[in-house]
Length: 183
Image 1 (cartoon, one colour):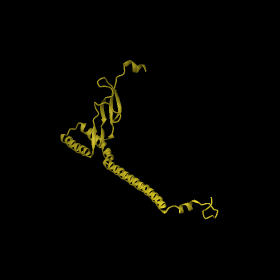
Image 2: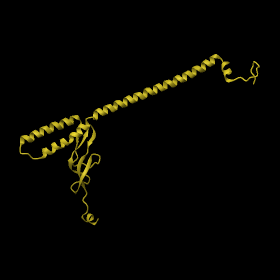
Image 3: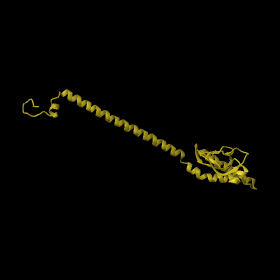
Image 4: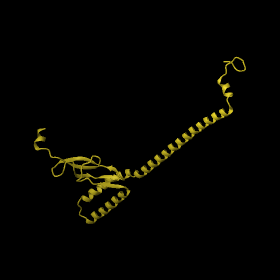
C-alpha cells in the first residue's frame, strides 16, 4: 500500500497512532491508567489484609503462649504434690506434724489451682486412653470391664488442656478358667 504522500512506502502502526484523534488517544491513556490504578489499589488492599491477618495471628499466639507459659513450671511441681499426698497418707505419731503437713499441702494445692491446675477424677470411671495410662490390669467381675479400679498417679488438666495422664489399674473381664490354661 502506498503512502498518501506518494513516496511508495507502506504506513506503519506508529503513523496510524499519530494520525488518531487526540481525544481517542487521551481516552485510551485514561483507561490504561485507570486499570493500572485499580490493579495497584487491589495489591495495596491485599497487602493490608495480609498484614491484618498476620497481626491477629501473632497476637493470638502471644496470648496463648502467655496463658500456657506456666504449664511447664506446674508440670515440674506435680511430683512434689504427689509426694505430699503420699506423705499425708502415711501414719505419723505426731498429730501436730500431720496437721502442719496438711496445711502446707492445702496451701500449695490451692496455689496451683489458682494458676489453672485442675485434677481429673479417675477411680470408678470408664478407662479413657486420652487421659489414662493403664499400668496394671485386674480380672474382676465386681466392676464392668474397662473401669478404672485404682489410681497410682492422678491426672491433671491445666486451663482445660491435659497436663499429665493418670496411671491407673483397669478392670478386665475374668477369663474362663480353662481357656487361659489351654492356650
